[in-house]
Length: 128
Image 1 (cartoon, rainbow, N blue to C red):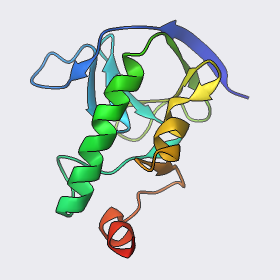
Image 2: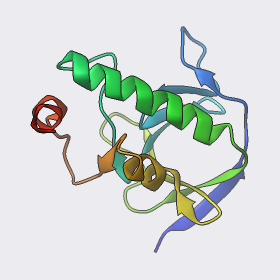
Image 3: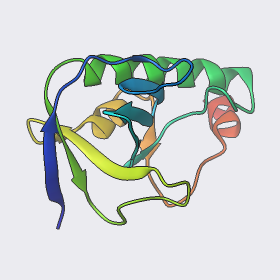
Image 4: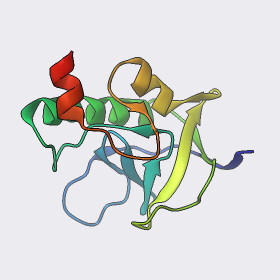
């Protein structure tokens, strides 16, 4: 069962150089109050390390949409499984009014549900 940690709100920007306090890295990763958070329930396309131009373009759209969603008001961060990933990022599900922000990105075609591994976005996008 997921445990709600905090209800949070901040003004987010896109991440630039350090320090990273409240900013969005990409479509599934952001910093809040100096803590790096990976959305545990989705996988979004890469931006900086994209394998093809199409992945980078979709990743940038996901990044901007996550920025909008986080700036839309208070949200909760919940632990649904492991508290951190192998990179030390906090694994959380972000929710507003009970709905996962990750689910919003998935419903808009900007991410996919997390399946335990990254997908090959270039192959998936080429098949569309």
